[in-house]
Structure formats: C-alpha cells, structure tokens
Length: 137
Image 1 (cartoon, rainbow, N blue to C red):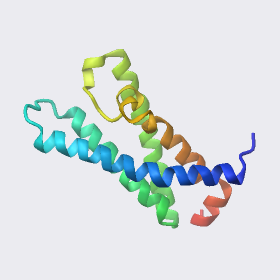
Image 2: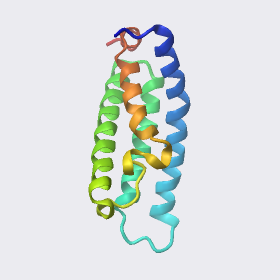
Image 3: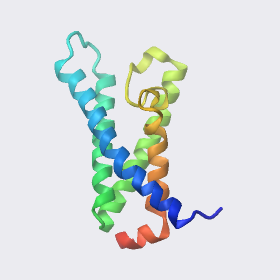
C-alpha cells in the first residue's frame, strides 16, 4: 500500500493541532491532580498522565525542529507513547483498579482515543521518505 503525499500532509496537519492540544489538556489534568486536587492519595495515575503530557510536548517540539536529533527524539517518544498506551490500556481493561484513571486508561478513551491514534500517525509521518529527508536522516 502506498500512501499519497496529500495523505501524509493531512497527517502532519492533524498532528500540528492535536499534539499541542493534548499536551495542554493532559498537562493541566496531571498538574491539577498532583498539586491542587484535594484528597488524592495515589499519585500513580496523575504521574502517568503528567508523563504523557511531557511526551506530547516534547514530541511537538520534535515535529517542529527539523534536525536529526529532533527526529530521533520524536521517534523514540512516539514509540514510548504507543507502548505506554497499549500497556496502560490493557491493564485498565484487565485490572480496572490497578492503575487508576490516566490519560492512557482504556487506550485514551477520555481523549477520544487520540493517545492511541496519534503516535501511530506520528510515526507514519516521521518515517515518510520526504520527511526523513527534511530532517536530514
């Protein structure tokens, strides 16, 4: 299957909007739960959400900065994201109370499954031949 340049450009436009928004929303959620929400006794879920937000923020920078190191960082972060979403999503299905409610719970259901779809789209975009060339890799 060959992907058209128009499809790859559309993925890039989706990522340009969705990653910063998800970084902002998950970051606000994680920081609120860690610092401001009364009665929080288990910090695992808010910490996972905050880590997810940091990944989204750094991946956004990796999409913007067209250097080989930024490309490698973004590919690594997106790989970490997809593994995190699959692991946390699977655990929340199998053991709902084990982790708590995170941005990656149930494969990102609270965020319209964007945490599951975004890293896949991001890796497709980053690995596209012309984009690799633009990054110098």
